Image (cartoon, rainbow, N blue to C red; front, side, top):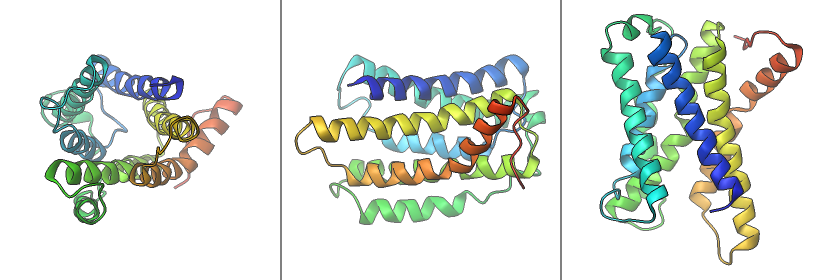
Length: 215
């Protein structure tokens, strides 16, 4: 644990809180991609298979439970809540997310740290998380109507990954033999996907105008 890792975890947690705040209090999921939320639920389900068999720390266990519970809660709200589901923009959220699951699974089978079920699922979750934001970014580009809470959610979600990269750099120079190519490459790809969003987010903040992505 270091400052960058802690800041990354807290930023990730803030992104989830912002999204749940939007959905629960405003009773709206407008601008939020259900496809992305389903992918994140799958990411956490595949990654945390060791939840009840491999104890690392209380902090680690609590964070796993929080991300698992929150991801499935968000999906439930968007699919089942009688008010929230009416605000879901199904017309524009048409990214075929199923087609990115299989390639990620194949990568997990081919490129992993150890060929066991849990390690393959862990690698699969890393690859899938790298591209899970794609449906959300496509939806924002299509609608171009981005409310403040949605913008904050995506920003914090991207910032978490940037902080994790800083954590890896720090650990590389302070810990002997710290090499995790799978996480590093997937994390860099994930961060690059946020590049366009970050640019326009900072531009809108600087000019004090509403965030709008180019179509």
